[in-house]
Image (cartoon, rainbow over all chains, first blue to last red; front, side, top):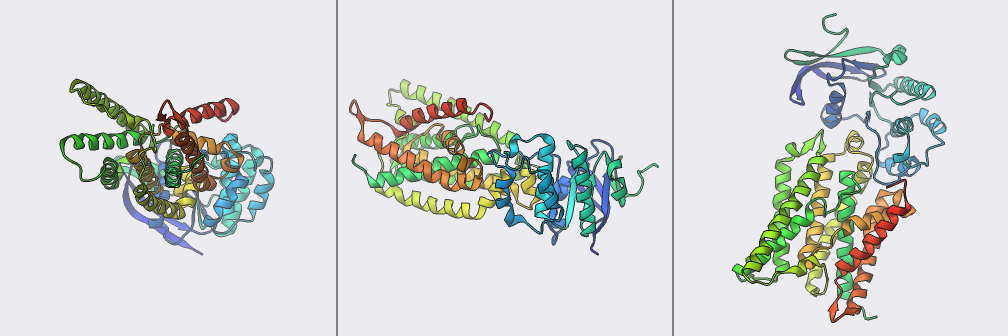
Length: 202
Length: 289
């Protein structure tokens, strides 16, 4: 079992705001990051993405964020696979199922895909690349029911494969049974606090 | 048709540099309208050439104009690289270059150079000096064999740069945030690609004058072919090679066809052909553009 204590009452500045965080992440668990809109959840994940070499020096990180793939050319997922190989860690088993679900638009230029198709390609790319720690920022956005269940299965496999999973999801009820711990982000007078358990004041 | 081989080789290198400068500019800004012309790189290089010509009026230059321009451009390149390095925090947003700021700065800089150029043009007219208008018609007419040395040296640097960065650039094509997630130093790749693009374009302008919008036309032309539009690596490696041959052939055509006693500037010929071809591409692919 892998256990990472990346912050212990650590303080750092993100977008000129002082953030105090205590995070302890254990492999095979799903951590849900909650907080009101605009508190800085995505910004916090983006901070970790930028500083991944510092906080996760020996781990392969995967980030599925809210932004769409928006290539300049007409590259499709099938064209893309070849160039992803240098960055591949180890593909997940669910990748095969993802291939089956996305077979109708794997050869379509990514920039012409709908929001949901683009989201599925992002998840497919992530399952193809693999890694040790996954940060999922609103992974259910744009997805229909069938694809939402695929994401659920994807997260289950990540847990089963002893990956660390960090999630931001406003429709978290759908994934509630998979969530092991909650981290709450809350604005306070002295800045933003991120801590395990119930929201401050409750 | 008579072929000047040294000129042909220089045209190959110039064509390749202009194409790569355009492709890198578009890729890094994720904007198909970006080119050295719109990013202010033409403006900066032209300013360097104007400064050289003004210096030549005041001091006797130890070398030919184009070598002095190249020297000043290299100095500007080094200084701007250092400036960007030390000012990177103000240019960066979330670990990548603030592209909007960069494009606006480029456009503003082009405007500034246009204004400076107008003032200088007025001064030349008022003082009855001959204005160096040949700068605006990119041509390889005045080439010398010695130009091959800096061009080949830069070509070597370009090959090394692509060897190290081509796979990172492929990932950057999907978006800066995705590339950053893979642990790529997105800001570093963006800044180095932009400065390289500036330098490649500047070298060609220093020696041969302005080739307006070729950095926009060539990458679009290449990207319209199926074999390139689905593969950024091919665009970055084979695109410049193919466009280099097109450019060199057009240049040899200009060399062999004198119009009313004057050689047709290859910059003018390729701009006319390129703009028509770009219009054709835009009209043909109604959905993509």
